[in-house]
Amino acid sequence: MSDVKFDGVSFRYPTGPADVLRDLSFAPRAGEITWLFGPLGAGCTTVLLIAAGLAPRHTGGSIGGSVSVLGHDPQATETALAGQIGFVTATPQLQLSGIAGTVWEEVAFTPANLGWPIERIRPAVDRALEELAVEHLSRRKPGTLSGGELQRVVIASMSVLTPKVWLLDEPATALDASGRALAYQLFRMQADHGATVLVASEDVEALALVADRLVVLRDGHPVLDGPPKTLLAGDAIWDEGPGSTAVAALAREAGRMVESSRFAAPYPITVEEGVARWR
Image (cartoon, rainbow, N blue to C red; front, side, top):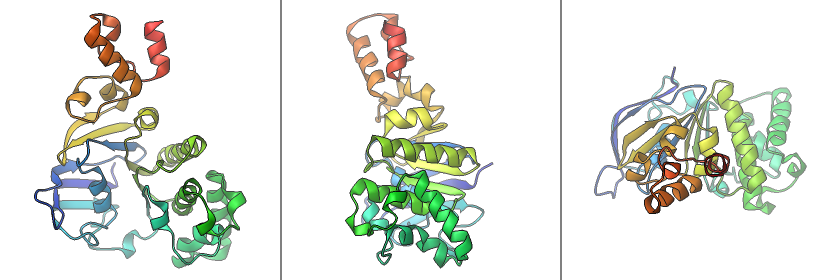
């Protein structure tokens, strides 16, 4: 089952000399974390912008093919998908309402605009703040927070809605280690409860462990698609550009210098796997 479907999608930005996406067809599955990964310019962010209804509506450009999110064309409707999509970018400052006086009001902003009664808003906001461990910031002004604190608040502002679809563009960039752990724990929990989680990120070390599916894009087209641990342990992901984890890179480089099965593919992708093979 899939709540998000791309069928033969192509896309070009207004000033672009070529298509950013080319005949892209794929469908992330509900209940899974699907990870989009690729070299610079592969089109991963553009996929999220299209699914969120932001491209080409706000970016301009031309699109071909068809896109469906929860049974709707995201380019044709905004109201039908309101509150059902959680969209998070790497720049939390750009995702704030700009009018909320406190963090609590910021997280409550969208539910209030959707017409939720206060009896529903209060527990939902408190839950979302607790999930990201920012309940102690509830009375702070958003503008006084650090980048990492703001990112947690933005994620909480999406989590409060319990969206059916999560669209995440480098969601952990501004977070410290504890924040990253909480964020990925939340995304995993959302997927386990049936949400479709689509994340574009270069956070290889984390997503190698939490993602269910890896789709590698190159020049706007899928070139690899499968379990992350399988693809990251092979050579093909290096041939296509993005590479793998630090441990896999070490094993691959060692294999070029020392002819030994200990350094041959499939490569270990975590420290624990490397220790188990090389000790």
